Every structure is written in C-alpha cells, then in structure tokens.
Length: 322
Image (cartoon, rainbow, N blue to C red; front, top):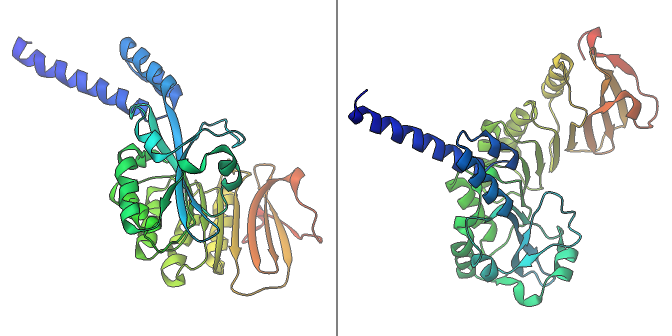
C-alpha cells in the first residue's frame, strides 16, 4: 500500500468513527460503549452525562389564548418538580447538550404542575402568526426530529401553531414512538401515513374529527403491525371484521405475544355489551375482546389478570377460526 492510498483509507476510518460518535450522542446513553475508539468513547460518555432533554409545552389558557414554555424531560421525572425555562432562557443554553425531545400541545397536559413551577414571565404568548414564526426561529434547530420520545398535538388553534409544527415535522421527516394527534387537515393524514410506513409507532391516540374515508385504511394498516402496543380513537369508526380477524390470527401465531396490547375504538353507534376471552396456544397470555356500550376493546392480558365481567365464553386460539 502506498502513502497515496493510505490517506483515503485513514479518512474513511475517521469519518466512519465520527459518524458513529454523532449517532450515539443522539441515541441511548448505554450505546456509548459501542464506539471503537477509546478516546471518543470517553468523549461521548462525557457529553451524554451533560446532556439534558427538554419538552416544548403549549398551554391553552382560559381565555382561549396560547402560551408556550420549555420544561426538562428526564426519564425518571414524574412531573412533580419540573425545571422550567422560557424560550429566551432555553435559547441561551449550550445547543450541544440541550435539545427538545418531546412536544405537548394539549389543554390538559401538565398544566397545574407547570403553572405552579413557573413564573408568569417565563411563558411566551402566542397570539398572531408572527408570534408563531418568532417562536420557531428560536427553537427549530434544537428539536431532535429524528427521535422524539413523545408528541401530543391535541390543540387545534386559529393562529397557526399546530399547523406550523406539523409542517416542520413533515419537512424534517420527524419520528416518534408515542403520538397523540388531532386533525388539522391533509398534513395530519400525511404525518400519520408516514408513521404507518416507518413501522415504529408503539402508542397512538387519534382525536375527534378525522375523516373516515382517509383515516380508516391507515389505522387498519397500523393496527396490524406488531410493534403497536396501544391504540385509542375518539373518532367514531367501527373496526372491520377482517381487521379483527387479522389481529387475532397474528396474535395466535406470535410465539411471544405482548401482554400490554390495548386497542380501543369508539364505535359509530352503541352496541349490546358482550365479551370473549381467547387463550393463546403457547403462552399464558389471553386476548380479551369486549364491547361496552360505545367502545370496542381488544386487550392482551395474563390469564391471572382477566377483569371481572359477565361470564366470558372462552375460545382457544388453536380451536379454529376466531
């Protein structure tokens, strides 16, 4: 090997390791040890220890106005004593270690705790489209679009905050595992469609107001995916017989069925209550199917945790079609 061919190989090795380091800094801390360079392993671990994740919160006030604020989002935080920062305070923090990893635009989420933990001067009022643009100029580069821990877009507003963040999420090909989504137009449908194809969503809550003709096919495709653990819909949509049969069949064939799956549909009209329990052929997990007034539920539970209910007919998954 000549010196002229060695240099490109050295550069290739450098960039590959540097790429690994950057990827690890945007992933779980436990992955820092995977770096092949001891020096960069230590550097990545040190930077991870200084990293602080934050949530962007939009608060719907009693008069209908909007305010936004930032609060810290550590994994072990139960929202009892959050650290709060205004947008200006957050913008002054070191961008290498302070990033936004979740967004909550909801009129109920965190409100009481955050109001108590913050000073009124820390809230940024959002009253005009210009306020929306100014807000995102400050924080757009600090949002970890590629790995959001949670995303709740439960507020639909008249000044364009929901629409603006949805546009940014689409432009940056954002990804989350937990999604609470109100309908704001075709962009909402496109955002949901992309998550169906990403095949990584574990929790989905669809608010009221979604158009059935475009939503039902996406929901049915998503619910069939094994990674989805929890699904709720406030939009009235009856699950098709073929979808329910498909879920049951996939569940009965799964050698390691998850016991936390919970699918809830708000039915188009109330129905007579009934319930069934399906036993899995290879595990101690059961699939509980029930209708209670206007809700249809499919839930995986351990046999020992079947809820009290008027006597369920028990069906063994291996006994034939369910």
